[in-house]
Length: 159
Image (cartoon, rainbow, N blue to C red; front, side):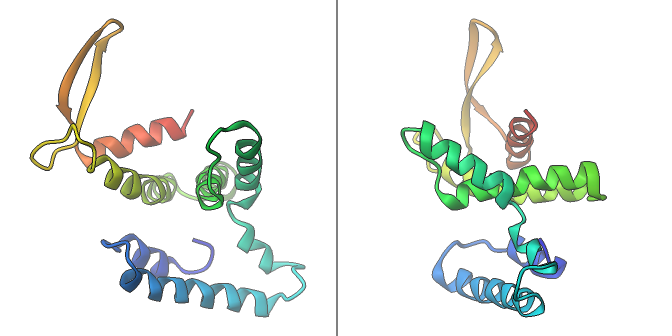
């Protein structure tokens, strides 16, 4: 996100989260970070871009460590921070709404939807939900598409 649009697009195309898929991406990330650090070894300027997501993320991580029975992991807190700071980028720094939605979807959707697919309530490759018709009236076995789930996650993100 901070240095290479093509690299971000490459990351978004990863289908399997395993060592074979992730190793070249980790190496690519290390290369980007190394290039940035070489340009600014004393963190006087451009190196500060490596902090994207960390200002909000560290605050969330600290809050979670103090207040949550099962605190967020560092990476989870930074992912939330990246979404929040992408929102601030849209509001104050020219990031487009399309780019904000893409960043949010990439960070939130695939991993959460992957876990949703493992839920015992599912059938026929569908993710099943219990949804409200109104307060006091629920329905069950309601299926949603990945896009619909992403919209729900983005709504949550907007609160």
